[in-house]
Image (cartoon, rainbow, N blue to C red; front, side, top):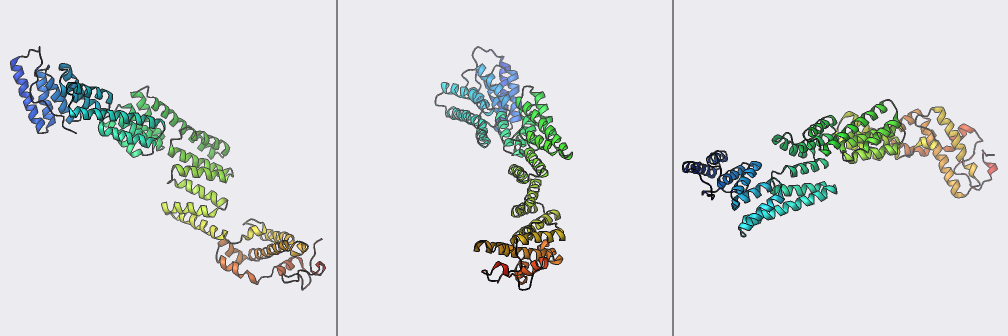
Length: 496
């Protein structure tokens, strides 16, 4: 803090009659106070200036000196009172006006500070300190104006910037600190916001604004019950504190709807649970952590309702709000697995495993990686049109049906392009059946082992022979090497 200075000479007031002994005693106390002030022992200086005032309560300079001492002790509200007493006793007391202005400015009342500095400049137009302080007061007013506009625009980062600048000139302004803390909370910087609010509450435990910000941080950290207690306390201190009233109402509504949605989910009433979570999400878009949980909960409901795309969208919304939310990554990954988007599933499981290296997460990642590897080869189950849990009989029936559908004889009158495509599909039928009808090969295929080897060693099988096993036919029947111009009647099998 810049030195505020003290008055080393007695400044006499006209028309005030003081007992000479008391005046000498007061001057002695003032001199002792000055000595302690020079030594920077401001507490002792304060005591002796107080004794001087008690002995001679109509002396403006004594109040001015004590105000200077209080300013050095950062007791600006008390210093403001002494400065105002000083200028009431002597309206031409420039140091008194200057100190009053500095107290107003430090406390954040830039308009009142500006008036004090203007008074000094009227008394002494060339006073450089008053000129500079007047500029400071003007700057604080501009920072206030900018912060108000940016707050309305919800540009909270700019508000924090303006308040930091303003606090550089108005260091003890609780109003500026509270606005900064509120914006820090809205930006998700809860620890910083709590620190500012707690500092104010240590000095003034009844400060409703600080209680509100403390509650707001807890509310945004999803500590709803604790937050409500602070909002209620703030309303006790300031019954008309509208922000606390609104936040308290939102907190209670969020808790109620979330808990009701959870209960409906446990009761398997998924449609109703989805509706409750949606209503909760509409209450307060600024509550990032709670909303992340609500999106994830709704995503879980979406999965239960067999709406994987919707579930993925909700989990993505949760992750956008909280990119450390493991549960949302796990839920989204499972949805990706369900719809066979394995690359996306692997990416999410990798994120989870990097964050929490548990055996369970490692197993989930390896499973997804295996499914991704398997997905890059032919899906013989899809080729035959059966599920992965199909029985031996189901596999045989599927082969019979599809082999008949794609047998080249059935398409002998088609264009060469169609014949070629059908021959390809017919061969794939044989490949699929060869693997899935052999228990050992099927096990290897299902486990993803030696996939490339399985794929490359299929050249030694004969799709036509597999077909004959099911339908019979003369030797020398259809083969892929047959003359494509051969009359249909010469092939072993014809469709009616």
